[in-house]
Amino acid sequence: RGEKFSMKDIENYSSLKDFFSDSKKIKCKSIILSGEPVPNMQFIVESLIKVKTPLPIVIVTNGYYSRSTADIIEKLADVVIFDFIFHDPVCASYIGKAENYADVIKRNILLAKKHSDIIIRIPIIPGHIECDAKMILSWIKRSIELPNIELLKDYTNASELSEFAEVSRKPSI
Image 1 (tube, rainbow, N blue to C red):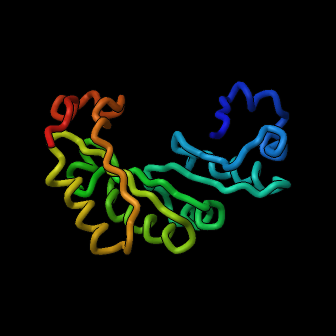
Image 2: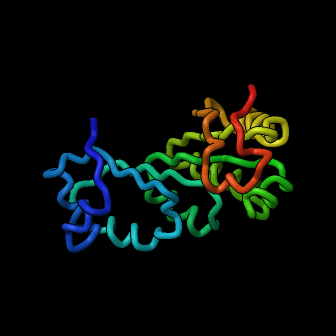
């Protein structure tokens, strides 16, 4: 069972690099970067570049990032956990405010699969089972051999979806 650290714990170190370098002392077995680490990727890479003890790195992401970020993740991550939320472009644009979402995340999943273990989490969003969840599962079945999939049935309480009345309820599966 691993230890969990908050930003308050990390603040005691002069840099994130020093924190990770001290990983043997604090008994870290892996580094999990979540809470959408992609916007901070440059800082993360700079912090990890001189870590003395190599540790497995897990990145938890929504997968909506550029090809250049995909190249960095390819070199950095041992495991990438994707939250694949929308397949339908209208849903992605309306609720997720993301253009070309499905195409971008599919590209990034396939790129990550070449160099990392991947897990694809699929939120079951009320009213979006047919247009999103089932379509995502269909794409995974066609595109990925032996996928690791997690269905998230309690995702509806996410704050970013609370403004949409049609999804602010429990899914009926």
